[in-house]
Amino acid sequence: MRIEKNTVVSISYRMTDSQGELLEEASAAEPAAYLHGGYDGIFPAVEAALEGKEPGAQIDLLMQPEDAFGDYDENLVRVEDQSLFPANVEVGMQFEGSSEDGHHHLLYTVTDIAEGKVVVDGNHPLAGQSLRLQCQVVDVRAASAEEIAHGHVHGAGGHHHDH
Ligand SMILES: [Zn+2]
Image 1 (cartoon, rainbow, N blue to C red):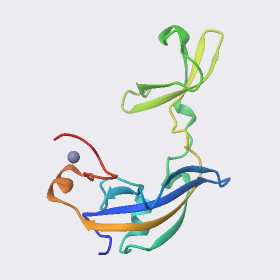
Image 2: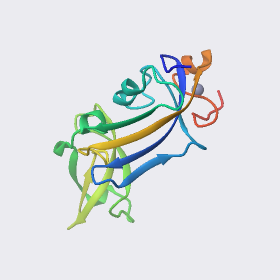
Image 3: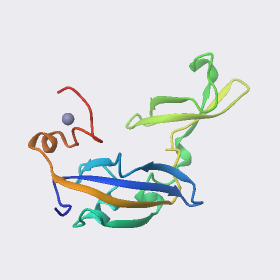
């Protein structure tokens, strides 16, 4: 079966940064699965590269930041009073919060703590990075009506929930 809209695609992959350091991987034995066709299950650039492919096909994709986790945005770095944070706050901790304009929900990572101030960065840790994705199609099947209605994959490698 070829990859087209409303197919469930299982892939093994290796994602590396521009220095070749491994960031994420999935083996053929435990592949990642997503619902193909613009459901935000995977980067659009990857969907475009996989469109029409069959099991066994391989792609090797170099993604610019705008195709991956976005450009680094200095405006997403904020300095806050340490009194707003739990007493055990430390570099590397993550907090959910809204952006300065209140329009976006972001995950902020603490990058520095000094003199009663905490620096938090709302950029994705991989923002600004070019990524290389090498992946192989493991399996392609038709999605169920329920998966299409939910916009995600159910079962092995997919989304787990009770509804
Ligand atoms: Zn669901």
